[in-house]
Image 1 (tube, helix red, strand yellow):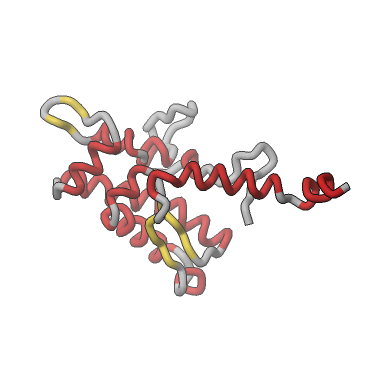
Image 2 (image 1 turned 45 degrees about the horizontal axis):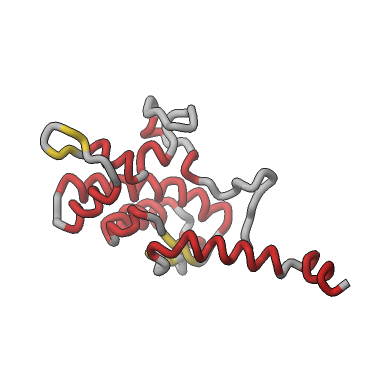
Length: 166
C-alpha cells in the first residue's frame, strides 16, 4: 500500500542522515544525508576526469560500464550507504521486494551488490530470508508509470467513484 504521509513526502529516504556523512553538506540544509553521499551527482563529485570532477551520474555509470575501478568502488560504497538506510526500512516495514531504480541503478550489479551486502547483513534473518533486492525494470519510464498510477488511484478512489455515481 502506498504511504503518502501527512504532507505527502513519506518515503523520502534521501534525507536520512548517515554517520559516515558527518560534515558533508546537503542541498536541503542538513548534512550527512543519503542523497549527499550516494546520489549520481554526489558520486560524480568524488571522481575525476584529469584534474576536474565528473559532472553527472551518467558519467559515473559510463565509467562503471567500462570497468573503471574507482567508479566501481564509489558505486559499491553508494550501494552500502543506500543499504544502511534500507536495512532500517526492512526492520520497519518487512517488505518482500526492494526495487532499486533511478539513474544510478543503471550501474547494475555493482550498486545492487553494495545494497545487498548491508541489507542482508544488518536485517534480521526472519525479515531477510525471502527478501529480494532487484533493479527496476521500468527504466526511463519509471516517473511516467508512477504518475499514471497515482492518477489512476486518485480517479478510482472510493470517494471519487461514489461522487461520479451519485
